[in-house]
Amino acid sequence: MAADGSGEEPVERRAAGAEPERPASPADEASADAPVPPPSGKFGPLGRPLGRNAFVTGFVGGLGVLLAYAAYVAVRNAAGVLLLIFIALFLAVGLNPAVVRLRKWGVPRGLAVAAVALGIILLLCGGLFALVPPVVNESSEVIDNLPGYIDQLNDNPTIRDLNERYDIIQRASSAVTPENITRALGGVLGGASLVFGTVFRVLTVLVLTIYFMAAFDRIKEAAYQIVPASRRHRVRLITDEILTKVGAYMVGALAIAIVAGTSTFVFLMITGVAYPFALAVVIAVCDLIPQIGATLGAVIVSLVGFANSLTVGIACLVFFIIYQQVENYLIYPKVMRRSVKVSDVAAIVAALLGVALFGVIGALVAIPAVAAIQLILREVVVPRQQER
Image 1 (cartoon, helix red, strand yellow):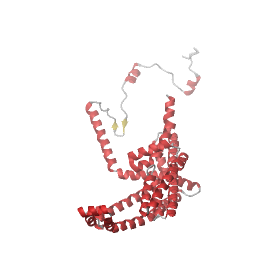
Image 2 (image 1 turned 30 degrees about the vertical axis):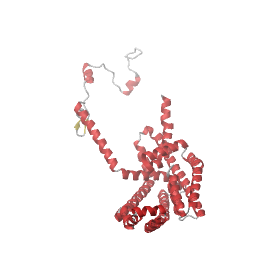
Image 3 (image 1 turned 135 degrees about the vertical axis):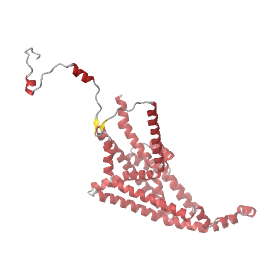
Image 4 (image 1 turned 45 degrees about the vertical axis):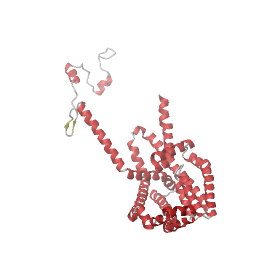
């Protein structure tokens, strides 16, 4: 019945050919209350779900515990390989800004990755060329002359008196021989295993870094596809900003290391210390480690300076004390504040925690991790708390 009481159906329903509504019958109500049959798949209808009894719950829980333990064992056994993959991925993220800069200059991505990889290889070869010959020569000279150094201890009256009582010099001379030192270091096979293992790890990291740089965009897009579409754009923006901060941190750390190595090279050339370029490379490499690296490199170079003369050793100590103060309070804060935008207190605390938890690797990734956490807190956590 129409609302105007004319007894005619509306024109729109008649034009659409719709049938007049009829009251629901008892059969229709019964069919509506009946349970819906389970959907039928390719291999027949689905069965009823298992009941939640104690046996099923305990079995599923135990299976979850076993799977978690299996995952833990797998990660523990593959920790070395996973660490190499992590280092390569971190280097690829840090070197990606160089690839992006070359692409802005019109260089194809393949050639840009090849140019950056060639630069890394040249740096490694230069560092090895600077470090390996002096280390080998000095080590061989020390091992060959060590018995003579022990014999010279007879000039000391106290040592002479102890030697007459306990025959210390003779025992030490007979024990300290090239054969015994080689045996103490693990023998020829042990030394070869250490050398080849180190070379294999370096080459593995280098190859993985090149692969990650070449497929950087594809890896990012594949990771973004896992995120729900409703949040993908925001996750993309935040992740890109984090990756940019990691790259800026790498560039800043390399700049600080180059400044430290150059300053050390000039100082060692002035003071006349042997192997100035090799020691400058040691300072630059150690300076890449936050907080503790500069001190470690300073100790190594100062020991070499004391080996030359007492005056040179004291000069090295004074130089590194002054330079570290300049680097810690002038160079490092300004570079990191502009590149990563992390406060000095946060950087120091992060580096200490990183060293305590993960060693050298933790110190390297501590500051980028703090920058990422600050960004997530500012852009995700704080706005969520403001909405409540």
